[in-house]
Every structure is written in structure tokens, then in C-alpha cells.
Image (tube, rainbow, N blue to C red):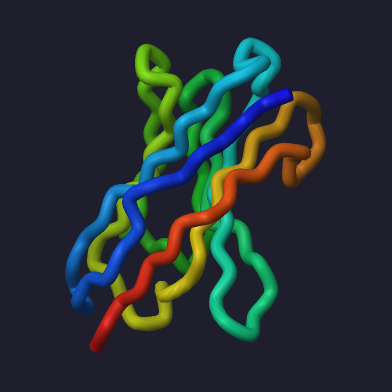
Length: 118
């Protein structure tokens, strides 16, 4: 089992920045990849980006260089840095962990709300 706890969400003005954190625990040696997703009100959950165990990252097209995923293994934490935020980035952001090739993985955090005001 893997447990995930997100934090760092909040209210920010358009153009601002936030850094979300995802603290992982449990069977962390089994984790192969970690992903971030988001879900806006009335919309389906959408993929934001991924970081592999090798530290390779890939992002959804809408990110356009504004978001960065990183990992601190010593702190068992994955980060999602959000820059140049837009009102359309308003959503609940979720951390996801996979212990296999499944996408998304089986483990989800509770989510953290990001609200961007215009």
C-alpha cells in the first residue's frame, strides 16, 4: 500500500504561483511513476504530468512550460510547481502513484484545491 497526502493549495491571483506537495509513504520502493491530475468543477479529471523513478518528466500540452514536477527522495515528496496561473487552472489537484505499468496508478491522494482569481 502507498499513502499520498497533498498540500499547498490555496487562493492565488492570476499570474501568481503555488507549489503543491505530495508526501508519499508506505511501500514507496514499489513506486514506479508518480503523476499529477486535476479536476475542475463540472469537468472530468485530466492528467497534468508525470515523473518517473529516473526523474524524467512529461507534461500535458496545456501546461506549456508553466508547471514543473520534481521530487525530493530524502523527504519522500513530489512537488508540482505552478507558475503563471490562469483562472482556468482552478481545480482540485491530485497526486497519483503507480506500482506497475498502470496509468493512472492505483493510489490517490485526497486532493488539494487551487483557486485562481482573475
